[in-house]
Length: 146
Length: 146
DNA sequence: CGGCGCAACCGACGCTTTGCCGGATGCCCG
DNA sequence: CGGGCATCCGGCAAAGCGTCGGTTGCGCCG
Image (cartoon, rainbow over all chains, first blue to last red; front, top):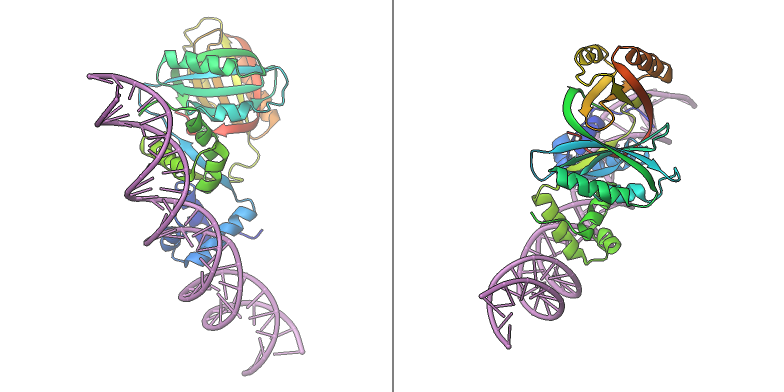
């Protein structure tokens, strides 16, 4: 694929925040016709620059409890587990990791009760061998995490 | 807003991976009519469960290795340790947690070699009793983490 | 210099998808 | 039993989308 020009970057900047705006609106903002914009977006998708579109799952209210769930699986290929996890908005991030652990699941829940509920749900998903809960008491250092 | 039911979770699971599929397709997958699905999605958006839609942009971060360091301290008040950790730019986030662990340190390094270096540095900080490394092989779910 | 090819743009056409409505169904509670 | 409420469905008009032919701008080479 060729180099991205300024308009492509505009498209990425806009779509990375609002992935579902109509092409007409997007075209207007970057100063191109709708069809030209359509072709550019299609090209960005096909070349892999745009890998997909994700819904940003939010949270109902404040006063949240964060926790790490350290998961060991029975068989490492975590078939189905990830789909199950994605169904819960409380699940903020899931990382497959090396070592004796398999998954690190980060959750954000409104209460400890709710944390227990979520924890139990995940523990009984099937394929989960061990699950350790580590509630975040304090955020000591916080920078942008990739 | 009320509690999320199974269909709502299905919607979230699907949209968090493919935010731009047609409502008709989504409706077919969850087993509802298109209009009912439309109303559910609209409700999820309005109530803030779906905060927005974002394009997933590829190759932003080429070649960085992420890892979790699971730290157990000798004496829990981790005074001094945090100051030390904050001196390393590779350290992205540090959380004090409950349970048998004390700290979860998230790092982002350009290579495995560099990870080993950082790991050893942290392990020998003084006050560190145990340190487990979990290298992130894959980011399975990624939402905004607070 | 002039003509050719390529790449990108535009506007228009027809199909698909969406938002919105009325009406039907199931459930709760007085 | 009979409203009230929530949720579902199907259908319609409007808006969205992919795709096409035609145009413009630019570099290249005869």
